Image (cartoon, rainbow, N blue to C red; front, side, top):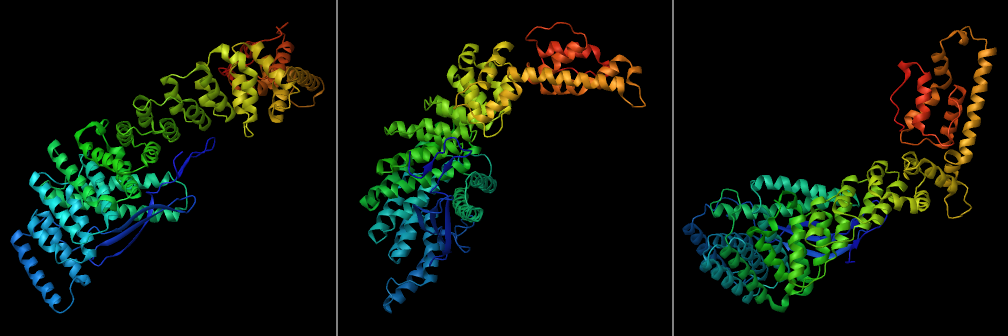
Length: 620
């Protein structure tokens, strides 16, 4: 199993430690933008993961020219650049070369962002020579942000040339740049699949993030803090997308890229990876892969079916492929996380990536995750496209939890007889009566007959204190023959097998054994004798003998009748059946068969009761 993932079989929950669900410490950078460092923690263990999204600088301050609709004209921008160049040159002459103040970095960053957004590559390059190393790192991030909005070959040449010059002049924080641009690329790709505005997307994303955190275990305060900070980071990405979209005249909607535009974008990212070379480690590629997958789980509920096969998903597929080629080794972990959270389209993409790169992904474990959280669409994908075949474990756990929707899905997909029998046993042991009622008709009778004793023993052993499931099987006459069902219960009740749970043995002995039937007869006889004493010697002012016969029968046997009706099912317990047999005999029912159906006995009793007291019996 992948590191950081724990699948607890037989418990009520599965825990998936998520390195991407992280705390985010925000401070102001020298350039005046949020500096967001995401440091992972596992909610249940409280241990930091290895994923760090360090020194994130969105470079979108309140005064930034990118925060509006690109209203700053190129002429005005160049005028500001010239003024800034003169100011920095004067500082350089005073011995302050490349030691920019905080305000200098803010202004230089705004100017550089304006130049990149207006695609004035020459102007952007001129600002590189004024930047110190920290500002160069920020500039590298801003330039890579623009990759995912490329539309022309000229833009491709401009960005790749700019990246090359930034690196040549001293930018060194390739890890931060790779993680940030991977995260943004994923957001862009996801937003291209949507029809709503970016403002609505923020709301949807926040709701999905809240839902995802609720599905995780751990400290509520930590989850709330993580949710707020990750949401802030994602909102930055959406603002960045909105800013570039408005610059392209798309009115707060993401432009859909053509195939050639996607080629330009992927070529630019590949150029960055080539320039970074061995400065990016396998760990960096792994974390970037995680960063690229995370937004897709937030947006997954809004994807149309089949999105992964459309052109809007081509960018993220190409990006993830390059990260895998670079050394990302967490495809399976991201695959399992996507399965758990029902991110069907991401699951589909990761399946394709695994196939193209000859990587192993655990489709059967993923099916377990998806089924545990009732992600039916993801389950369909894993079976049909991932060829997941291990139905037994997920089916049994769904039966134990009473998740009938998942159980029905597995049954309709086709399960073997023994899988159905084991699922029935699991539902019975957990007293999931609705699930057991659904499964029972699907288990062949010959299988039930051959394994009847083992089914009841196993259900009793794992019952956890409640034997309602066992009672349901017996009341349902699960063997289709009253004599056989009673015989199985009696056999277990009289068994000397120490493997039989004491609680089960006592329950069957008291209610379903031959001894219980005889005890029921005895109780019926005692009840009748008490009734006769009342009739003959009772001192009640109401003379029972003067009442109509049906009312006398109702007084004597209405409690027993109601108890039998409320039990439901096809069979009564042996104790109730004994009492009912005795009652019917005392009413003149004549000789009865050794094994009489509850419905037959109740019909005789009903015949002697006042019609207005008789209810339609549920005992068949």
